[in-house]
Amino acid sequence: MKTWAVINQKGGVGKTTTAITLAGHLCSLEKRLLLVDLDPHGSLSAYLGYDPDQLKTGIYSLFMEPTVCQADLAKMLLPTPLENTWLFPASAALATLDRRMGADHGKGLVVARAIECLANRFQYGIIDCPPMLGILMINALAACDQLLIPAQTDYLSINGLDRMIHTLGMVEKSLARRKPYLIVPTMYDKRTRASVDALAKMRQVHQSRVWGSVIPIDTKFRDASKAGMPLSIYQPKSRGSQAYLQLIHFLLDEGQANHDEQ
Image (tube, rainbow, N blue to C red; front, side):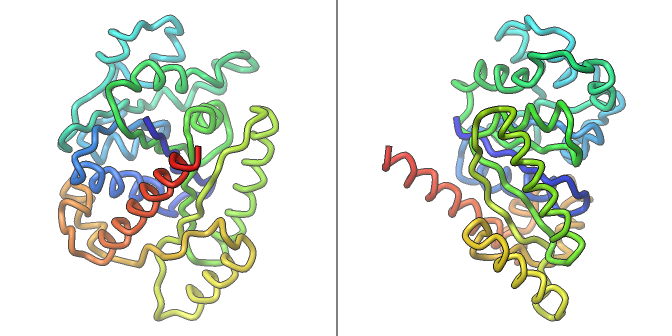
Protein backbone atom coordinates (compact mmCIF):
# COMPACT_ATOMS: atom_id res chain seq x y z
CA MET A 1 0.00 0.00 0.00
CA LYS A 2 1.43 3.35 -1.10
CA THR A 3 0.42 6.26 1.12
CA TRP A 4 0.68 9.99 0.39
CA ALA A 5 0.17 12.71 2.97
CA VAL A 6 -1.11 16.07 1.66
CA ILE A 7 0.39 18.64 3.99
CA ASN A 8 1.09 22.33 4.48
CA GLN A 9 1.01 24.52 7.57
CA LYS A 10 -0.64 27.29 5.57
CA GLY A 11 -4.38 26.99 5.05
CA GLY A 12 -6.22 27.69 1.81
CA VAL A 13 -3.56 26.28 -0.50
CA GLY A 14 -5.60 23.37 -1.85
CA LYS A 15 -4.84 20.45 0.47
CA THR A 16 -8.33 18.94 0.54
CA THR A 17 -8.86 19.75 -3.14
CA THR A 18 -5.65 17.89 -3.92
CA ALA A 19 -6.62 14.90 -1.78
CA ILE A 20 -10.13 14.51 -3.19
CA THR A 21 -9.21 15.13 -6.83
CA LEU A 22 -6.37 12.62 -6.72
CA ALA A 23 -8.79 10.19 -5.05
CA GLY A 24 -11.22 10.64 -7.93
CA HIS A 25 -8.53 9.81 -10.47
CA LEU A 26 -7.42 6.73 -8.53
CA CYS A 27 -11.04 5.65 -8.41
CA SER A 28 -11.29 6.04 -12.20
CA LEU A 29 -8.17 3.87 -12.48
CA GLU A 30 -10.01 1.19 -10.44
CA LYS A 31 -7.65 1.37 -7.47
CA ARG A 32 -8.69 0.40 -3.94
CA LEU A 33 -8.24 3.52 -1.85
CA LEU A 34 -8.24 4.55 1.81
CA LEU A 35 -8.80 8.23 2.61
CA VAL A 36 -7.66 9.41 6.06
CA ASP A 37 -8.91 12.74 7.40
CA LEU A 38 -6.57 14.05 10.11
CA ASP A 39 -7.79 17.65 10.00
CA PRO A 40 -10.03 18.59 12.98
CA HIS A 41 -11.97 20.83 10.59
CA GLY A 42 -12.98 17.63 8.76
CA SER A 43 -13.07 19.21 5.30
CA LEU A 44 -12.44 15.91 3.53
CA SER A 45 -15.09 14.11 5.60
CA ALA A 46 -17.58 16.93 4.93
CA TYR A 47 -16.77 16.85 1.21
CA LEU A 48 -17.77 13.19 1.18
CA GLY A 49 -21.06 13.83 2.95
CA TYR A 50 -20.27 13.40 6.64
CA ASP A 51 -20.67 15.92 9.44
CA PRO A 52 -17.51 15.85 11.63
CA ASP A 53 -19.52 17.31 14.54
CA GLN A 54 -21.87 14.33 14.50
CA LEU A 55 -19.43 11.46 14.00
CA LYS A 56 -18.89 9.16 16.99
CA THR A 57 -16.05 7.08 15.53
CA GLY A 58 -13.00 7.46 13.33
CA ILE A 59 -9.44 8.67 13.89
CA TYR A 60 -10.14 10.08 17.35
CA SER A 61 -11.15 6.62 18.56
CA LEU A 62 -7.70 5.27 17.65
CA PHE A 63 -6.05 7.53 20.20
CA MET A 64 -8.60 6.75 22.90
CA GLU A 65 -8.55 2.98 22.30
CA PRO A 66 -4.92 1.98 21.63
CA THR A 67 -5.65 -1.76 21.55
CA VAL A 68 -8.23 -1.66 18.75
CA CYS A 69 -8.14 -4.92 16.81
CA GLN A 70 -8.20 -5.23 13.02
CA ALA A 71 -11.89 -6.15 12.93
CA ASP A 72 -12.80 -3.06 14.94
CA LEU A 73 -10.60 -0.91 12.71
CA ALA A 74 -12.55 -2.03 9.67
CA LYS A 75 -15.80 -1.03 11.38
CA MET A 76 -14.48 2.51 11.83
CA LEU A 77 -14.20 3.00 8.06
CA LEU A 78 -17.07 4.75 6.32
CA PRO A 79 -18.23 4.16 2.73
CA THR A 80 -17.88 7.01 0.24
CA PRO A 81 -19.58 7.87 -3.06
CA LEU A 82 -16.38 6.79 -4.79
CA GLU A 83 -16.15 3.18 -5.86
CA ASN A 84 -13.67 1.03 -3.90
CA THR A 85 -12.88 4.02 -1.67
CA TRP A 86 -13.31 4.16 2.11
CA LEU A 87 -12.89 6.98 4.60
CA PHE A 88 -11.26 7.05 8.01
CA PRO A 89 -13.15 10.15 9.13
CA ALA A 90 -12.25 13.12 11.27
CA SER A 91 -14.31 14.45 14.13
CA ALA A 92 -14.26 17.80 15.88
CA ALA A 93 -12.79 16.06 18.95
CA LEU A 94 -9.45 15.76 17.13
CA ALA A 95 -8.84 19.40 18.03
CA THR A 96 -8.45 18.35 21.69
CA LEU A 97 -5.80 15.68 21.14
CA ASP A 98 -2.71 17.77 21.77
CA ARG A 99 -4.18 18.98 25.07
CA ARG A 100 -5.36 15.51 26.12
CA MET A 101 -2.23 13.65 25.07
CA GLY A 102 0.23 16.25 26.34
CA ALA A 103 3.70 14.78 26.44
CA ASP A 104 2.36 11.23 26.20
CA HIS A 105 5.08 9.36 24.30
CA GLY A 106 4.28 6.57 21.88
CA LYS A 107 1.34 8.36 20.23
CA GLY A 108 3.22 9.35 17.09
CA LEU A 109 2.70 5.96 15.42
CA VAL A 110 -1.01 5.44 16.13
CA VAL A 111 -2.16 6.14 12.57
CA ALA A 112 0.80 4.31 10.99
CA ARG A 113 -0.06 1.14 12.92
CA ALA A 114 -3.72 1.37 11.91
CA ILE A 115 -2.84 1.81 8.26
CA GLU A 116 -0.44 -1.11 8.46
CA CYS A 117 -3.25 -3.31 9.80
CA LEU A 118 -5.50 -2.29 6.90
CA ALA A 119 -2.83 -2.36 4.19
CA ASN A 120 -3.93 -5.66 2.66
CA ARG A 121 -7.35 -4.15 1.86
CA PHE A 122 -6.09 -1.17 -0.12
CA GLN A 123 -3.61 -0.26 -2.82
CA TYR A 124 -3.30 3.44 -2.03
CA GLY A 125 -3.88 5.78 0.89
CA ILE A 126 -4.23 9.56 0.96
CA ILE A 127 -3.98 11.49 4.24
CA ASP A 128 -5.44 15.00 4.47
CA CYS A 129 -3.41 16.76 7.17
CA PRO A 130 -4.13 19.58 9.62
CA PRO A 131 -2.47 22.97 9.02
CA MET A 132 -0.53 22.95 12.28
CA LEU A 133 2.33 21.09 13.90
CA GLY A 134 1.12 18.69 16.57
CA ILE A 135 0.42 15.06 17.26
CA LEU A 136 -1.75 14.67 14.15
CA MET A 137 0.87 16.05 11.76
CA ILE A 138 3.53 13.87 13.37
CA ASN A 139 1.27 10.84 12.88
CA ALA A 140 0.77 11.76 9.22
CA LEU A 141 4.52 12.06 8.64
CA ALA A 142 5.13 8.70 10.30
CA ALA A 143 2.35 6.97 8.35
CA CYS A 144 3.09 8.11 4.81
CA ASP A 145 5.56 7.03 2.15
CA GLN A 146 5.68 10.45 0.50
CA LEU A 147 4.56 14.01 1.20
CA LEU A 148 2.66 16.17 -1.26
CA ILE A 149 2.91 19.86 -0.38
CA PRO A 150 0.38 22.02 -2.26
CA ALA A 151 1.66 25.58 -2.41
CA GLN A 152 -0.37 28.44 -3.83
CA THR A 153 1.62 30.48 -6.34
CA ASP A 154 1.80 33.73 -4.40
CA TYR A 155 4.48 35.24 -2.17
CA LEU A 156 2.66 34.65 1.12
CA SER A 157 2.46 30.95 0.30
CA ILE A 158 6.15 30.86 -0.55
CA ASN A 159 6.94 32.16 2.93
CA GLY A 160 4.61 29.55 4.40
CA LEU A 161 6.31 26.89 2.28
CA ASP A 162 9.68 27.78 3.78
CA ARG A 163 8.23 27.31 7.27
CA MET A 164 6.74 23.98 6.23
CA ILE A 165 10.10 22.69 4.97
CA HIS A 166 11.73 23.85 8.22
CA THR A 167 9.07 22.05 10.27
CA LEU A 168 9.53 18.93 8.17
CA GLY A 169 13.24 18.95 8.95
CA MET A 170 12.59 19.19 12.68
CA VAL A 171 10.08 16.34 12.65
CA GLU A 172 12.36 14.16 10.54
CA LYS A 173 15.05 14.53 13.19
CA SER A 174 12.66 13.37 15.90
CA LEU A 175 11.51 10.44 13.76
CA ALA A 176 15.10 9.70 12.67
CA ARG A 177 13.68 9.17 9.21
CA ARG A 178 13.60 11.27 6.05
CA LYS A 179 10.47 11.51 3.93
CA PRO A 180 10.53 12.33 0.22
CA TYR A 181 8.34 15.28 -0.66
CA LEU A 182 6.96 16.93 -3.77
CA ILE A 183 5.86 20.56 -3.88
CA VAL A 184 2.75 20.99 -6.03
CA PRO A 185 2.17 24.58 -7.30
CA THR A 186 -1.55 25.33 -7.03
CA MET A 187 -3.99 28.08 -8.05
CA TYR A 188 -1.64 29.18 -10.81
CA ASP A 189 -2.87 32.03 -13.00
CA LYS A 190 -0.57 32.59 -15.98
CA ARG A 191 -2.33 35.91 -16.68
CA THR A 192 -0.94 37.57 -13.55
CA ARG A 193 2.63 38.67 -13.02
CA ALA A 194 2.41 37.85 -9.32
CA SER A 195 1.59 34.20 -10.02
CA VAL A 196 4.27 33.86 -12.72
CA ASP A 197 6.95 35.45 -10.52
CA ALA A 198 5.95 33.38 -7.48
CA LEU A 199 6.24 30.15 -9.46
CA ALA A 200 9.66 31.19 -10.77
CA LYS A 201 10.82 31.95 -7.23
CA MET A 202 9.47 28.62 -5.99
CA ARG A 203 11.40 26.73 -8.66
CA GLN A 204 14.54 28.75 -8.03
CA VAL A 205 14.55 28.06 -4.30
CA HIS A 206 13.29 24.47 -4.20
CA GLN A 207 14.43 23.29 -7.65
CA SER A 208 13.79 19.59 -8.30
CA ARG A 209 11.49 19.35 -5.28
CA VAL A 210 8.86 21.28 -7.27
CA TRP A 211 6.62 19.30 -9.63
CA GLY A 212 7.29 20.19 -13.26
CA SER A 213 3.72 21.28 -14.01
CA VAL A 214 1.07 23.33 -12.14
CA ILE A 215 -2.52 23.16 -10.95
CA PRO A 216 -4.28 26.11 -12.60
CA ILE A 217 -7.01 28.36 -11.28
CA ASP A 218 -10.30 26.68 -12.21
CA THR A 219 -13.73 27.74 -10.95
CA LYS A 220 -14.96 24.21 -11.62
CA PHE A 221 -13.35 23.11 -8.36
CA ARG A 222 -16.02 25.08 -6.49
CA ASP A 223 -18.80 23.54 -8.56
CA ALA A 224 -17.47 20.05 -7.85
CA SER A 225 -17.23 20.81 -4.12
CA LYS A 226 -20.84 21.99 -4.06
CA ALA A 227 -21.88 18.77 -5.79
CA GLY A 228 -19.87 16.69 -3.30
CA MET A 229 -17.87 15.04 -6.09
CA PRO A 230 -14.21 15.13 -7.10
CA LEU A 231 -13.66 17.38 -10.09
CA SER A 232 -11.98 14.42 -11.77
CA ILE A 233 -15.41 12.73 -11.83
CA TYR A 234 -17.70 15.78 -11.89
CA GLN A 235 -16.01 17.32 -14.95
CA PRO A 236 -13.02 15.17 -15.96
CA LYS A 237 -12.11 17.26 -19.01
CA SER A 238 -11.77 20.51 -17.06
CA ARG A 239 -8.37 22.19 -16.79
CA GLY A 240 -8.05 21.45 -13.10
CA SER A 241 -8.96 17.80 -13.49
CA GLN A 242 -6.52 17.31 -16.35
CA ALA A 243 -3.74 18.91 -14.31
CA TYR A 244 -4.34 16.51 -11.42
CA LEU A 245 -4.45 13.64 -13.91
CA GLN A 246 -0.93 14.63 -14.95
CA LEU A 247 0.07 14.65 -11.29
CA ILE A 248 -1.37 11.22 -10.53
CA HIS A 249 0.40 9.71 -13.53
CA PHE A 250 3.64 11.35 -12.39
CA LEU A 251 3.24 9.89 -8.91
CA LEU A 252 2.37 6.43 -10.20
CA ASP A 253 5.22 6.43 -12.73
CA GLU A 254 7.68 7.67 -10.09
CA GLY A 255 6.50 5.01 -7.68
CA GLN A 256 6.99 2.30 -10.29
CA ALA A 257 10.44 3.63 -11.12
CA ASN A 258 11.44 3.54 -7.45
CA HIS A 259 10.10 -0.01 -7.18
CA ASP A 260 12.09 -1.13 -10.24
CA GLU A 261 15.30 0.35 -8.75
CA GLN A 262 14.95 -1.70 -5.58
